[in-house]
Amino acid sequence: MATPFELRAHARYARKVDVRVTVDGQELRGRTRDMSLGGMHAELPGLAAEVKAGSEVQLAFRVQPLRDEVRVPATVRWVQRDAGGVVGVGLRFAGLGRVQQWGLNKFFTQEPS
Image (cartoon, rainbow, N blue to C red; front, side, top):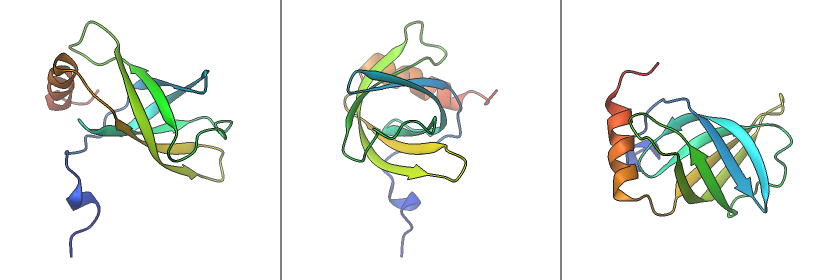
């Protein structure tokens, strides 16, 4: 039987970048844990109680070699809270453009810093 990881449509890459997540007009700052062409796992501050599965959010982050910031709508797929107050969220992108896809593919093939 395949594991959920094996069923993913896009390969995951352990890349850490700063990300801004805007939900209901409130901007939360966090850091990615991993990314793919389909979405990301981001860690947000513990005060992110308003982030719920199914929420529609706006993401903004930077990756090399893209000159412009990546801005993309996303859907919260899952939320996980730990005892230390960190909130992990699974986010699915809703419409990356071609240039953004190209930039992310280039970013994924670079050695992580």
